[in-house]
Amino acid sequence: MSRVFARGPASLPRVATALGSRVWDTDGQSYLDASGGAIVVGVGHGNETVIEAAARQARAVSYAHATMFAADVLDDYAEALAGLVPVDDAHVYPVSGGSEAVETALKMARAYHLARGEDRHVIVSRRGSYHGNTRGALDASGRDGLRAPYAPWLGAAVHAPSPYEYRCPFPEAHPDGCAAAHVAALDKLFAEWPVAAFIAEPVAGAGLGACVPPSGYWPGVAEACRRHGVLLIADEVMTGFGRTGTWFGLDHWGVRADIVTAGKGAASGYWPLGLAIASGEVHATIAGAFTHGFTYSHHLVGAATGLAVLDALRPLVPGVADKGRFLLDGLRAVLAADERVGDVRGLGLLTGIELVADRATRRPYPRAHRLAERVTATARDLGLLIYHGTGCADGTDGDLVLLGPPLSTSEDELAEIIALCARAIAATR
Ligand SMILES: Cc1ncc(COP(=O)(O)O)c(C=O)c1O
Image (tube, rainbow, N blue to C red):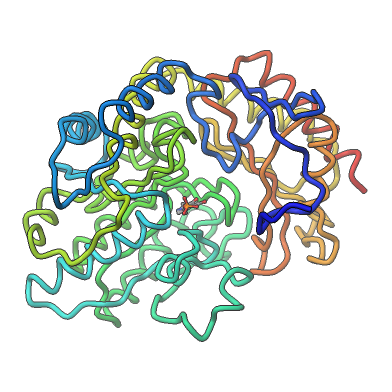
């Protein structure tokens, strides 16, 4: 019996090796990786250049505490990132994952207002969102199922409606007035509370399944934040590093954030890396007086890995939009006749499939049916790795399949993913 405090079911296959978009277990079974784990692996598995860059840095010096040494590799990585992130005059605070990045960003926002003499402390986020599992990030998250056991510790964040066009929270305004209705709702919250920051995913990820907001949403939200002196935190942990077809999700709308959080694709799974990236103004306001830090923040191997991943991504990102369209169109075509598929949506190589009990009414399956988990298990038996989400419809019910293959996945492999995905959904009763 294993002494690992396991996270998944007891009967998981044992992983052996991985290369490109394929993973093999110790029995020799091969899996096509349609989700890069949890939408993590952008550059594909087994990239020798990235592995070598990490090893080279570890050989030179693997660890130096960020209060004791500066390092060229950190400067080089921050410089390279600054030219890509939708943040003016970016300053990069590297950490160990998405949740740490979000905690760091929330504290930066609070510190910024305090330094300016304003006691703003409220974080506004969105229902159905996911920002991480540590306490501050979980409080910002709007997923009831994850929050419920820890509810006595939470409750400081205020949740606004999410742009979820399949189940629009403003049916009377849908579809042309949705963006304005969302902005009006935020305007009201920003006027009511001493709001420090608004945090949101540019394209909703694990919680709502690749929901793309209406076109006026992000420009309107950014404008509302500026009007009320609220910092805009774009949580790009899932959407960053080319996932949606542009380097960062906000780029689709030409919007700039005050702080960007990132993780997942930043190091593509080769190192546990997260980033909180502050604008020059935020940085200048709090630098030197920001009470924060982690033992493993500003990690040298993380920076070397991130830098090599950026180089590996450069030739891949321009092809993501076309690959994403191929995946989305292909899935829509093969799933059109499946009565349990309510919606297929997404942007770039981030695709969500929402499963329903009744297509006409969009009624979800009851949670006890565990459809999303069972589809994922069927897919794995067929040799396909996909990610799932639950609770999208009302916080409890609502089944999602999420796809986010490596950006290096070939069109032939995408065609195989499409076919296997349809088979997995059809075969799960
Ligand atoms: C948008 C978003 N923010 C934050 C997180 C938390 O990241 P991590 O799991 O690396 O702590 C996630 C993880 O799924 C995410 O999708």
